Amino acid sequence: MIPPPDKAPADAPRRNWVDRYAGRRLRPYLRLSRLDRPIGTWLLLLPCWWSLALAAPAGGWPDFRLFALFALGALVMRGAGCTFNDIADRHFDGLVERTRNRPLPSGDVSLGAAIAWLAVQALIGLAILLTLNRTAILLGIASLVLIAIYPFMKRVTWWPQFFLGLAFNWGALMGYGAVRGNVAPTALLLYAAGIAWTLGYDTIYAHQDKEDDALIGVKSTARLLGARTGRWLAVFYAAAMAGLAAGGLAGGLGPWFVLLRLPAAGHLVWQVRTLDIDDAGGCLVRFRANRDFGWLVLAAIVIAKLLA
Image (cartoon, rainbow, N blue to C red; front, side, top):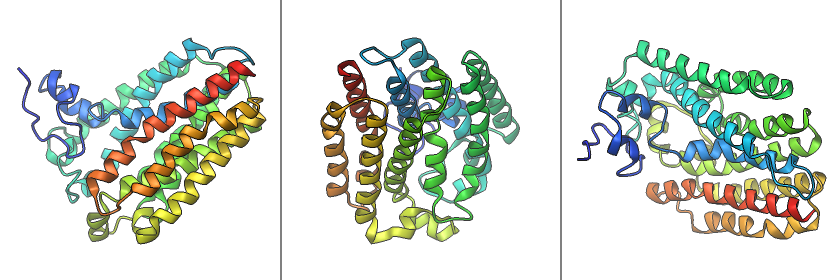
């Protein structure tokens, strides 16, 4: 028997595994970590995998042990980041239709319990981080600054999506560092491409909340760009594809990569051409579709590396 999706968040996939299988007491904590909405974990993980694949030796496969470690780390740290974000936003979330049923504003989890849950996830993340080399460990520690400041950026700047990009694509530096022990220009180019990509997909996501955000005074690129969003998305995504091409060529992928990335480019064109910023459901579909874009980029890097 499937337990009822009590106070389920509005943007959670219907009949997700948390609602189907998690016990009633555990369910609010899994929701606090967004485990009922795995898209965020994918968007955090895929830049890590891009860089691990890019750092692999020419003609070789990426290190699948590192793939597994980064996957587990992304799952745990995305959960920790979401928990911290909800603690910081607990007074705002209750005022927004899409977020009012989150565990803290709905009362399913107390503030003290949320802090304890955050500590548990952070300790698991630290244990995973300590299995990596010194470069990756230092980069992982440095990422905490970005994680800490991001939830507050929408209160002070119209560009909180940029700060999300800084945090969510940090794995592009960590993955390369975990393999090579340094951060080369090719990793920096990959990082810049990821930031531009995040500016695009999170602007799409933010259009779901623009009316509520305007009422409570929360800033976003969706509110800033408004009807000009389509043109700006084209700029963000073009910058992302240019950064990927430059990073791939700098990383020795060769001309094959320029061709292999065309399906990913086509996917972004589809997002821009079909987006209706006033259709919240359509915005969510296109936001989630960025997982497919990430997989297309990963496939292009792996194949080009094998052909290098």
